[in-house]
Length: 617
Image (cartoon, rainbow, N blue to C red):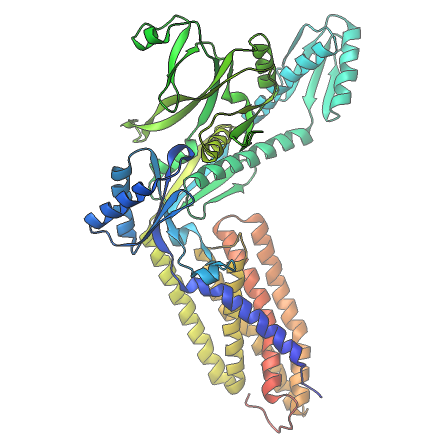
């Protein structure tokens, strides 16, 4: 029969609506201002520290919702942002400088919703408050580093192939290495060797056949720049994740820019220290010949320096540094064959050669790994930032069992957490290319709260206006359109909450307001088409059927063009523009679904398949 639908269609639509409603529910629970407190160097916060915090908060009359110890870190929840800020200053005084205290917003989602992965929508910087940085990446430095690595690699390869050469140096032109030879035969052999190793290298022979220019192709240069940018993004993301910043945004912006947004962070000095923090290693031999007691008394040997283990044990090390952390390209934590924590180190070509040459004659001696970190001190620079103080300690020393190369392990660490933290810091200290802050903005939490209130108010007033218009103008069919509009909002919020990378920004809220107005356009087209069909003398059931079928082409045409614009905005835009594009695109898709499918099912359920002489339209 005309305008009758099978039960499974209703069940599918109801199931979709219920799923989206379930994942939209966490947005009804506002997030709590919170503190994330973790111990420095990957240590674990002790139980007594939690007790001390609770007692200090109670003594200072700071209302605390809860203080939890989760995975070795403290999560303290508060009722307001003012109490959160007071608690942060108090926590720093109670715990000291060996702990990292970060502001965050902790979701208050019930456990039964969290168990199915339901979380509230992620809010952008303009709604939550925080700091925004635009960083410029020095791409020329990335190319120079790659050329330096090529120079070292060419020298090693030519020596191993027993090809004699005069010099291997970076050329006067950009992205070029010049190799000089004594004989033309040596140059010919080098061409055969290098061309077989890498086909993206451009080899140019000189006229006298004694010089070879090795250039990087445009494709290789683009790959180097892209790798430097993506690697720096990964490193910066590791840095901000290390201190527990809630929902940080670290993303690419153009060819050589990186946008960093830290929601909840209001101290730009702290944010700069996070981005500019650096950590590295030095590898030195242990001096076992000198008198340690005399060194502790102030009589240091000429060729040694006094260091301390992280447990306070003194140790004499050679002044000569075998290798620095500048050559570390990667560091990962894991376990050795005895199930003890370790950090696996990978060096670049130059570092591998240096380590191999330095360790071949010292097999059997002890090698110490010195951890070096720069932390803000009490003194300030002229611009108000803290002067970075160099801190160094021995994290392990082990006997060299064999000649070392590009890959080796650091063992003897106290815990897996320390190994993971050390690996993270070493990766963070190995930026592929230098970065420079070229723009910074701070958005206060009060402004973000005001933006949310104004945005919600705009959505509410827009929704009320549309609901009243539809009821007054289309009567009972207007109620159907309003039900579809409500379902549309539920679908939008549910989908936005389910998408991992979706962030709601202030322009995104404007997109929701725009969608509220646009969502009824499809219903207006359908209802007007039904009116036209009735005016032409068709029956009620024919008018409903033809109205939905013939209006669909117009609805699709008008919405697809808008959807294409939203996709283009998402592809080329960044930050708030991308947030607007996401909400607009989702709103278009859900509005088409609710108008064409949802409202039709509802109309057919109420008026379909019945002998009617008129419609309340």
